[in-house]
Image (cartoon, rainbow, N blue to C red; front, side):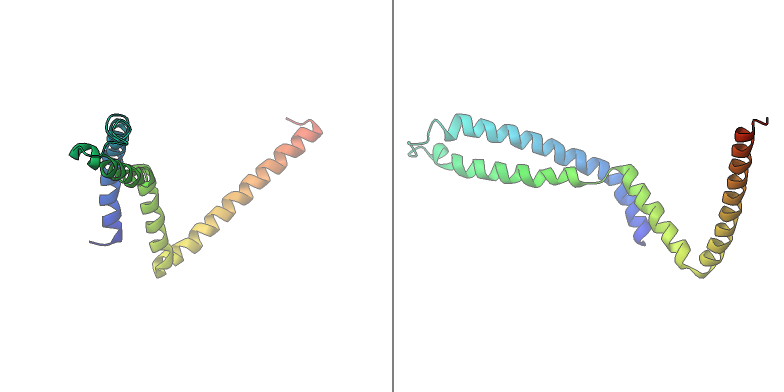
Length: 133
């Protein structure tokens, strides 16, 4: 598999990975709040209970998990990955010898089309100024 194949695979997987990590971040945020409210704060001074002694560690673990799962927000959308694939493909074409030959032809065609558009705009502006139809 080449790089483009991996990008195509990542395009399909990125939506799911981002969704799962987003779901995990929501669950861990809720869990961290529950542990803080019902374990850590009530048992702040009484650490003789085993569960209460583990509360701060559990709270820290949940907070770390929450922030790690927020990396799901950094995953690009499927459309963004497809745009990256198109960019990579265009770069491959441009850097190849046949692609460079085609690029010269494409530039000539675009240049001719732009000249035609400029002439049309110029004649339309001239007609507008002189009042011709």
